[in-house]
Image (cartoon, rainbow, N blue to C red):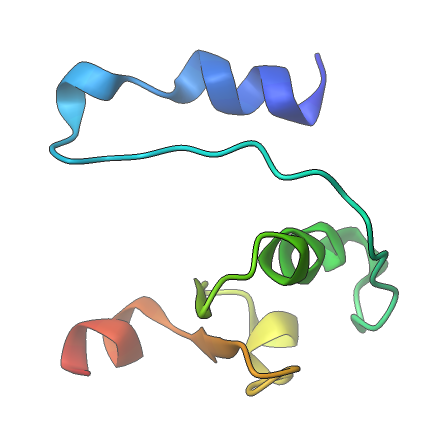
Length: 80
């Protein structure tokens, strides 16, 4: 199952209020993460022009801030 299919199969619009989803085309590739499997997250953030990534992943948190994108833990986000 592709990554996109996994996202769609786990998305339940009736369980969220005011949620939006957007497919992001990959134009710029990212190969900067210490753990190469994590590159997809800043890649989507960059191509989707996100303001922040919220994650518990230590490798991603070490990159904060990255190219103008804040990378925050859930606790940091909740406290902001």
